[in-house]
Length: 315
Image 1 (cartoon, rainbow, N blue to C red):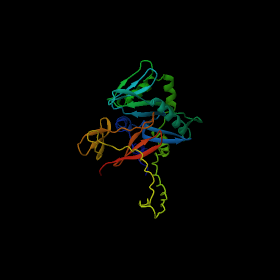
Image 2 (image 1 turned 135 degrees about the vertical axis):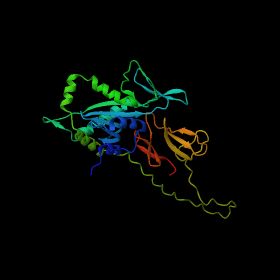
Image 3 (image 1 turned 180 degrees about the vertical axis):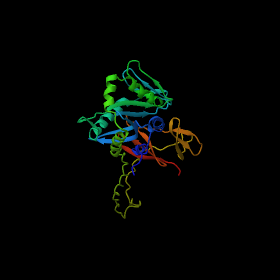
Image 4 (image 1 turned 30 degrees about the horizontal axis):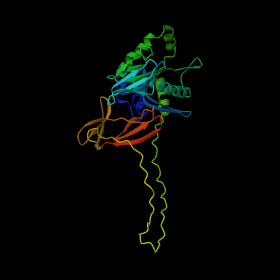
């Protein structure tokens, strides 16, 4: 028997941006006019789209939602540059534009949708409409530019209000056109199932094979030499590559567990019970994330295609 859609769509990805996912599900998951897909990863023609949340309604409106959970605040300049506040360094730091990032996701999604089965009216294949929105945490501060359009950057708890505003502000002629392509819930469900069937999880790379042992050399023994001969030449030791692991910022202890709280994931120290925010470093412009799978947590970066085990909570 086929699973109910509300349950099926949440299996598309491996994780969900917890706070935004909860708010989206609260307003849309039970509606007969919408379907919700979390953490949908699509590949097409060598390009990848990692979509945090996708909303599809019966007018075939596709709302592509990118979640950004800033710990302190966000600033958008007049040139459209995005800056995040670093509470430790007490300064703003540059970051990749989530608007541009979402535009790339929509470009891939548009090509994928063009290859699936969509409803046909009067012999013509219906064309979806794509909308881009950036969701930030409800308690995050946003310093907006007065010159650059920041209307697509909203608080996660304002999503429903924003979507209804889009619908109310559309011209009557467009509303009439939408009425002609108002689809059944079953049709929208079929579209969603086709997309989730194309979900491609990020492959975890296999550990590298051990390097072949270097042959050792034995020095010849000279009878006239009183110094003991060096029997084995050891290869020079190479420094191991650094690996990110959680550690307590107070005592440096690395035993504990990763939990999710008001400001996102954090490391709970098993020695002093202190809390340390989980943050990653990567190449400039990259946005590494933490993925939870059972008691295991993986550091993943979609921009450079890496996934490594970061921590394992006690069972």
